[in-house]
Amino acid sequence: MGTRGPAPKPTQLRVLHGDRKDRINTDEPQPSALEVQPPEWLGHAGLEVWHTLADDLVLKGVLTAWDVEAFANWCEAVARRREAAERVAVEGAVIELPVYNKNGELTGHRLGKNPWLLALDAADAQVQRYGARFGLTPSDRSQLKIAPPKNPGGAERLLS
Image 1 (tube, rainbow, N blue to C red):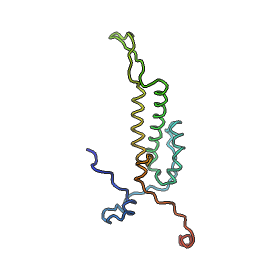
Image 2: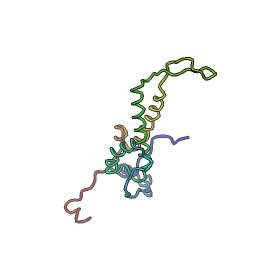
Image 3: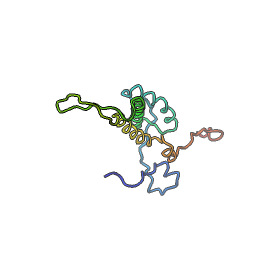
Image 4: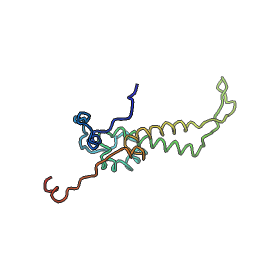
């Protein structure tokens, strides 16, 4: 059985909200500031999606070296979704499918659902599931809190 209730608040958000000290995980692991690179297995179409958003997500602190696989999966799902949507646009949602008899001989055709719709539905689900983890939809983005980058000026610069 899965976890019940809403997803837990991120630790940084708990600190900002002033939650009780015993409810804040002070031992939460933090990813190192390693360079974020796309994995080698990422296909050409997925790589195009990666290059569109990765730099901005890294800058905002949403994409770290620990998140590369999940983000690459999202990029591949977006690429599959685009391909499936193009095929459905060309072929249509309803297509003629062959009908065979028990001997394997073609006996005619029938109208049926385009198999690319299944691929489109599966890719849609993956895009939404992985995209939510990176705040890539408006409703998910509204739940993220990211501190603005610090630009030390004046006395703060001298103390750092």
